[in-house]
Length: 153
Picture 1 (tube, helix red, strand yellow):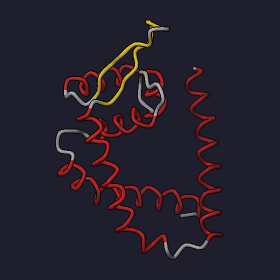
Picture 2 (cartoon, rainbow, N blue to C red):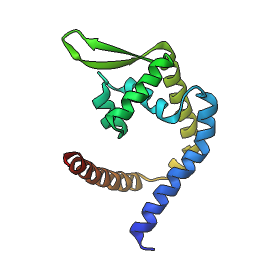
Picture 3 (cartoon, rainbow, N blue to C red):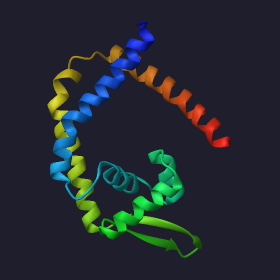
């Protein structure tokens, strides 16, 4: 296995381990929501005027899937939809109090997970951080170009 394959396998394994450790805790504390629903809530919270198209791009899902997802979240009273008086065509989403609560629980869990793993990050030098961040930016930029190519077809 060459360095590239080892690196990609290690990234995949790292991600799988994080999911394996975090998922049961997330499910217990956010038992009303699926992982995808929680990430949609997070995307809505972090967006200025989230609509189906914007959420589709943010979450790398089809617009149809986002429509189904937002309908489920509306049904669960986690979000509501609204229209901008200046643009009646677009439908936007905002968190309800219940959605805000789920968002804050999710944020708290991430803080707990970061605290659990902090000992690893304390061992990383600035140069190592810079190298990893540089690689991730380069790879993300490449994937963005590939995604744009797919969207044009």
